[in-house]
Image (cartoon, rainbow, N blue to C red; front, side, top):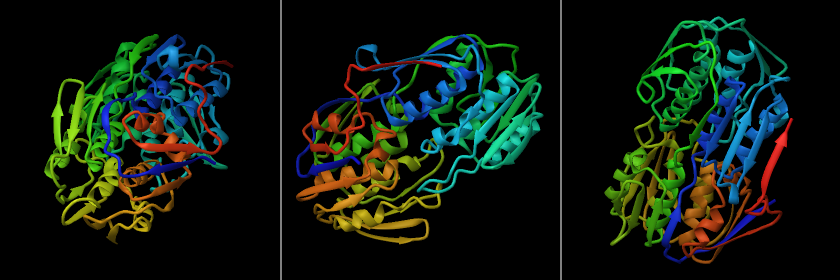
Length: 435
């Protein structure tokens, strides 16, 4: 099992390029199910979840070509014949996003059998909102032996009001609605950039969609979609993580290939704690001219402060003057990194959904363990300023959503190395798999 070994104390200096968004790439890959034609996606990140999605599509009968290095992070997907429309548990159990194929499978083939998404370290991700909406569109859904089975000759448009904002629910039902008969009106939708990115691809494939990026989306179903080419937008959470890396180390770091508009809440908080952020059209330069100051955050749905940046901000708060309050409103169990930060010398007290972080705590190296994707990022950030050599175990979590994070950090001065059975193949490897 791989580990990171990090020696702290080095300010990060230089330029770092941001990868494509994993949380956009996954639903866009699922959208290829909706057509017999080829869907070509660019700026695909080289992370574990993408490989899992590739295996899933191939297991259903799709042809998937996935290439990195000289292939410039591209994938070509052709779902001409979906011989086995099943999302098998043994494939999707590590990705927690099996529900993303439920909508497109039933829309395209009239049936779907999908493993129930399991809970993860940060809390359960219920699929009841997907089920309720698909039933309103005419699907018959049963649950047995850990699988959902959905059937419908053709979905029909419906008026759907989500009981709570759900990103995957919005994406799943958006994909279901594009081939449904008539018009679907979806209210209380997620407004995340990842939803907008998916809608752009679907429109390029011939879908009729209005309102993506707002709380109300209208979809007029069409008989058939065609192939398309689409470039995945930059990863806003990777961007935010590296902004904190530059700030916490007192460095001078420029991030390129990003979209500052997607990070307004994060940038606002960084400026509040004393970080200088210089914005351009597709780049951000971050510097810390003086001591960091405390600030409170409260996670919210987009465009509020993202839950996926909560753990990273908490690491930053350990180095700020005063006490910062961090309130988690999205997931019920997303403070599992707290105990590991405390092992490194942080002073944090948790009371329900709020953590009080006493700043200016000198951190020291320790052996720590990652519990989930973003928790592992917070431990990397803390290790960058800790005295001594920190060892982070279970870094397979970070491989799910960060592309070669140790190589990117080393390129801007971090003293970080990976030990163990390295997951990555060589940079020039291209994988071509045909069902």
